[in-house]
Length: 208
Image (cartoon, rainbow, N blue to C red; front, side):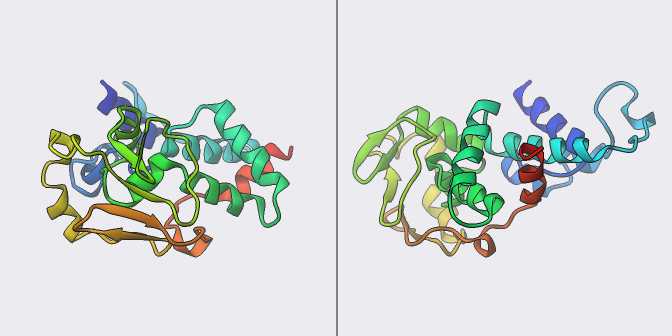
């Protein structure tokens, strides 16, 4: 059921949100097989002309769904970003990228953000040598993230070392593939982040 709902989110958005790990890159991807709206008559529906507000709303929903955030969380991050120096959309993306669950995902420990969220929530992740279970913690330069001793033998970490050998992390973090440790080297910049989002549309949405 959960797997199906993730696919429907991509189909509603009309593009891949990469919510299901490696499956999104294969022919098994639901959007590849069914490139139309979900529902009994989805393949017969034409996408109607969307208003400017609708376009902005859809973009916001895409980001929320990709990072698994509630509206209140997302609005809070936007308000923080809006008060900081810099382009609000870029700062917002920096905040989202430095969430602990996203770092676990970007660092290769998890195949998706939902899996990373579960890993942190179940206490399998260490931050600077201490066990943490709050996925929304924001990491800082110099922080180190690793797998908790005792959790390394769990099924979800099976063959992780082998997977990490081929994994390439973003430039703002460094991965020790043998020690299975991620270190935050600097604040992520826009050019470091491969994104399918138009953050300006989100700024416009909340600025209405």
